[in-house]
Image 1 (tube, helix red, strand yellow):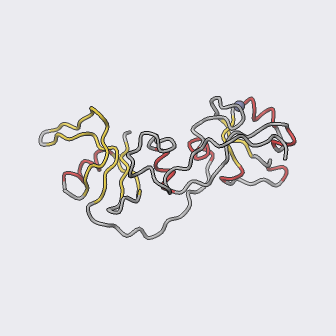
Image 2 (image 1 turned 45 degrees about the vertical axis):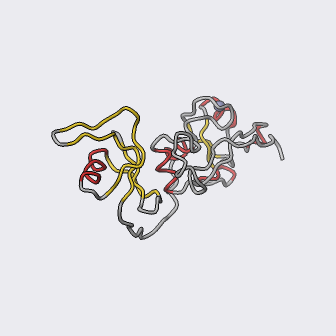
Image 3 (image 1 turned 180 degrees about the vertical axis):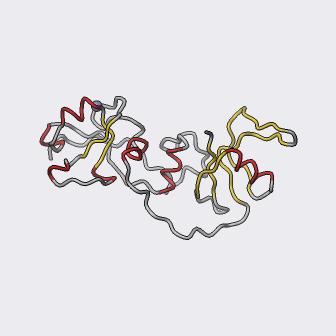
Length: 181
Ligand SMILES: [Zn+2]
């Protein structure tokens, strides 16, 4: 299912909508296409326009609240792009940096994506206790980060310049932390 990012009139990411809904908004003149898939077009009876990847509302919509994205295992895997925080290979599991047995919680800052082998090797230990180094710095994604990640944008790469601004997705790759501190 192709999703389109929808921006407020002031370029603030709001939500994602289905391609169908995005096309309708553009056809109804409620939104303009800001970024389209190169070479892909929507063609129907009375429609021929580039497949919108990002659309922007013509009129500003007031957003009632902006809360942090709720934590989820799937969310952690998406945030970390399914890359193991220890070895960089494909991750299918979520590791608690401070294990739950030592009081670590299900939070964005205490969890990272990990491959099954590293998760098993680390077991109920902190990275320092296990002698393992985290190569990423976990962060709590804003709803906007979550949307951009869901759309497949990485570290601003592939984003038009106006969207790759502070407040956009936080780089996932960070300098390696020492194994023990
Ligand atoms: Zn690994």
